[in-house]
Amino acid sequence: MSIGTGLAIASSGLSAIDQQMAVVSQNVANATTPGYSVETVSLSAETAGGQGSGVIAGPATRQLNASIQAQVNQSLAQNSYQGIVSSTLSGIDQVMGTPGQNNDLPSLVANLQSGFQTLLTDPSSTVQQLSVVNSAQSLTSQINTIANTVQSAVQSIGNTVAADVKKLNTTLATIGSLNAQIVNLGQQNKSTADLTNKRDLAIQTVASLTGAKTISQANGAVSLFSPNGIELPLNGTSQVTVSSTASGTAFSVGGTAVSFGGELGGAQQLVNTTLPQIQGGLDSFSQALSSRFANTGLSLFTDPSGGVPSSSATAFSASITVNPAVTANPALVRDGTNIVTNSSGAVLFTPNPPSGPAGFTGLIQNVLGSALGTTTLSGSVQPAAISTYSDASGTATLPYSGSGSLTTVASSFTANEATLSSSAKT
Image 1 (cartoon, rainbow, N blue to C red):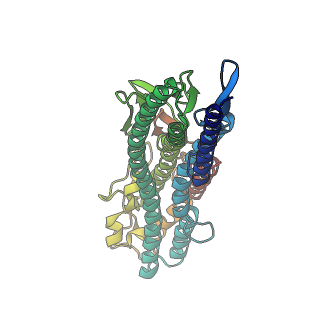
Image 2 (image 1 turned 135 degrees about the vertical axis):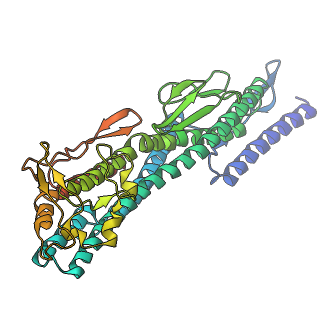
Image 3 (image 1 turned 180 degrees about the vertical axis):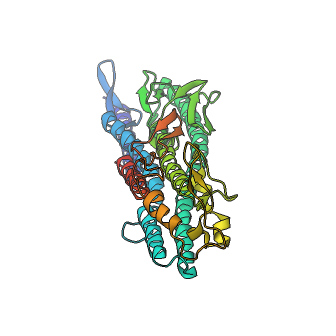
């Protein structure tokens, strides 16, 4: 071996070691960089005529366990799903009130009942009449607060979905661009490690948003598929679209419906199923509250114009209030507001006229025995509260009967919300 050949071999070895050290230095510098995977440089002997002629350093490659990477992406999707569900329902939990603190619906109904019981002992007491009105206002205020919180959650989720879909499409286009660069470098036998790290970080973003799965291609590119098997567009010319209507939120790719996990899947579950059930239960209770009082001769709970909803309860919880006429004249909680008749037209209750006895107890007894009880003025069992509501699937049914007293209906609604919240967070 000539001196020149020996020096060339030594020089190639030193060059290869320099490349290895550069990669080691890069690994150390990026130890905390999100999405970065450790890289290595493989060395091989270069020969000429059966004789060693130097050392060849191959392109930097990543050391990565594909199975663990898939598990990480799945975990990101699950955490994002639970994150939006938990934060949304926790906000509703907070306004539902706490049993025993006189701020939950069953307690507020009980307070109203207690007020009427006290009024029964002295129907002429203007102080107690006003106290009953105040208790009724506390109840409607709590109903309004819950309804407004649910609607605010729906609006907030809508904003989140719009931003997420925009981010998703941008990230998918980025992955498509990186795919092209990676394939090109691979064909030139150059390192694709840095670009692949960038692509994996982008894939993590998509997984967090959608729960998408990744399929590697032989040429180094990847394809992404939604949980229901729809390939996500990476070419930048086609995009994921979202449609949000009164019936719910839906995603599609090129006109084909697509279902997601991740944050978008959690948002869809909330808007399409969970929140409509909470809203439906609250509307049902509100309508039962209004109609049962009106059917005993006291239209205490109405819309702002003083009207009582019939069989439809949609969105009533957001507008339910104490009848303005009662607010202006609290004595009506003793005297009543309307005549009540049975199905045959027979009069069951007539309001106490302004010149009537100050000790009139007929209405108060009706309220305690019927509106807040379990039977109508005719003696039949109180009809169950409305059990149906609308969600993304069409007409849905509440998972509880809505029968019993108003306190029972309020308790059923409250318990169902707690169950929904607890199960959705796990």
